[in-house]
Length: 203
Image (cartoon, rainbow, N blue to C red; front, top):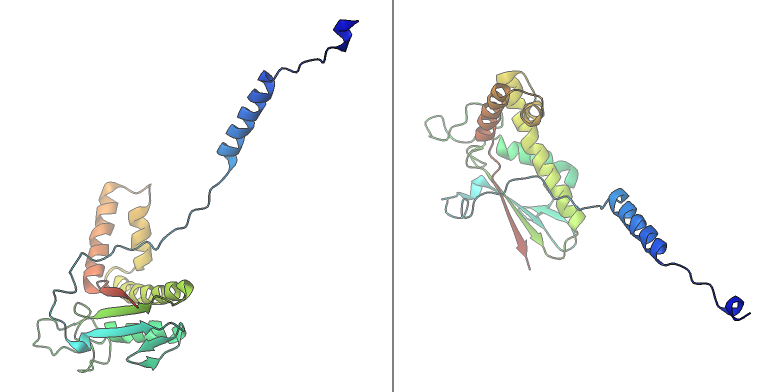
């Protein structure tokens, strides 16, 4: 009679095994979202600060704490930024006897604007209170400007888009010879329109 009054004991060993298996299942099947940054190589330290830069070779872009975009103290719409950046980079204002004369530039050749893409610098100064999404949108427009100019020259020289050259270089199924050929073309285009972008925060 005393044996019947005892509470039956449950083996906890199998419960631990099930919990362990569930833990492994969730670890294997769960995907962790990670924030991806902008895929861009930053310029070396002091590359721009040590250069003798003329004011006309700097496109000064400022983002204030209200998120407004200003160029030379004039408010500019985000939709106009890419075209303004292209006009500045592609101006080619240096005279033909200058060492930095740009023979491939198709801009207005305005003497008051940038001499050459090699000397043109885009300076982006952002207020610390500016919205991050707005900053990313400005970055995208500037990168689109560089991409459009690079694609123009890639099509002129190699009859292929610049993005296609990058895709060929990064493709896993191309030969080393094809990859090296694409690399040389990419480097040549980048040398024509180098990414001279200076960024800073303003208090």
